[in-house]
Length: 159
Image 1 (cartoon, rainbow, N blue to C red):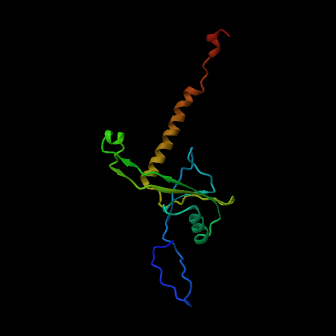
Image 2: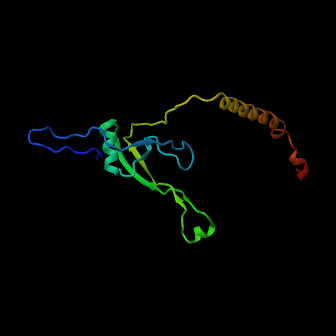
Image 3: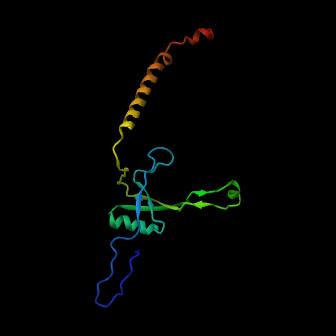
């Protein structure tokens, strides 16, 4: 699908070909731990709302030569802004953001995807991580005195 105007075809002219569609796709970072994590061979994309599963599969296999096994899509509703509680009660929305279409693309078994690191870590972030490590070490040292001491439990029970 393309938004370009098609020229009138005349006999003898070459067939009209579209090399790049007007669709767009963006890789979305998914959590690596927790309930919402994805398998290693699954990639999460935000895609153009007009794209179907077949369009997504063809886009990735023909343009990027990726080994697509399965495509699943989901439409996420945009946020609704209400002016007051009565508007929410009577369903009179002041504003609604556009819906998003999310595609979960499963690749072949040997394929592993990791989200690319686009920017270097900031110095403030590195200092924060260093401070957190120091706090953990101090906590462990303070707990050593109390966690492993001999409490003489048997004396109080008469054993």
